[in-house]
Image 1 (cartoon, rainbow, N blue to C red):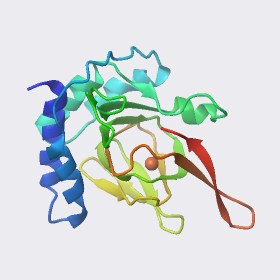
Image 2: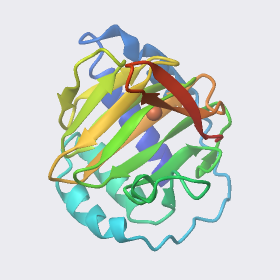
Image 3: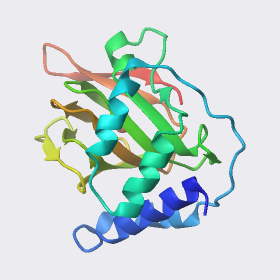
Image 4: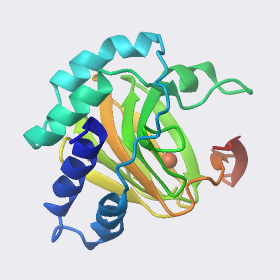
Length: 215
Ligand SMILES: [Fe+2]
């Protein structure tokens, strides 16, 4: 079994083991079951980035089923990371404090335009501010601790390895890391090619949206 196929199977099994705690995992498990394990043949980028110096520590701190931990470590160590936001008026901190590696998706080792799955590396003491997108998303915490807020009026939840957060389509959400880097495993399903929007709250308390990125 190839590395990406092993990752998909391990993540699917991991999410399936949570069924019963929450019923909303079904669509993600189904999407991971339906991934055709065809490699795209896409060459992996060889990104040099300061945040990657924290990758080994984050991988060492990962907790979870051994097959998932091993497959994530193998894929994460093999390169292919990219900056989620680049240029175009993007705050440099935002750009430099988060990197992703797609296993499945338009940039993935397995090509797909209908889902994305992969690994997300967040720097310590970083706020990924409020944003939304049309895709239905799950974040599964692999290493570190992260506060995740879904909705502008909700309290953030602190999630640790083995815990997850599902963000419904169009619901604004924000993340805040603590003293350690964070590795999240993500799966996007639904409209994965729709733009991402920042949510900004004015002094009058009213939220407005501005275009963050067209995937
Ligand atoms: Fe998001």
